[in-house]
Length: 245
Image (cartoon, rainbow, N blue to C red; front, side, top):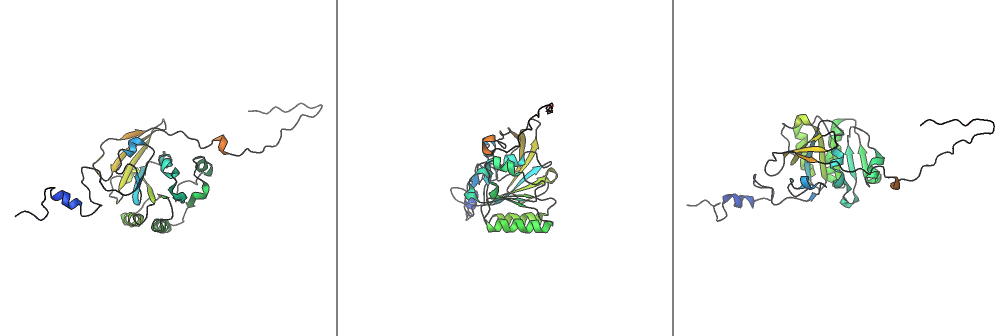
């Protein structure tokens, strides 16, 4: 007698129809949620859905802050995203408003939160994700327990918020509920080497290189002129003071 799951398409195909979250380990999930393009064709081609998944935990593993992790997210953050706020939670440095404005991300959309206690940061992250009123949440947290990561990943699924967590290279061998984990390594040229250590689909056994994007952070045309006091005029009978460069 044949198994109830047996059919012309095979048992595995029948199981895949049980829930949209199921997929074959040898291929990208056929039914994925909404995604946002990364701005890098080579990276999009390696991601299920051809972009950053929304409503999910994404981990970017870095050796230290400032290796190009924010530049990597620039295109996604510039997307309209209903003009909702972008939240920076516990960043290692105070945000540079001039740089964000140069990226054409109005500072009125930027929310900077720096709680004093870790548990307050976790609570804030969970509320932001559950509320769903923010376009993206960028969260720097280390160390952090796996149970907290699971809680935040579950909260992220209740909205379409872009949710990135920045963690150190040292945690790459630890289990994580994140649907996507990338290891970032900078190059002296300004380029960035990425290794996908976890994704929904087959393993990605090769790193790939992303060239540096041109920066227009300080475009003169986007800033108002600065008023400067006029240089003092030399007085009769006096030698003008020479200004050094």
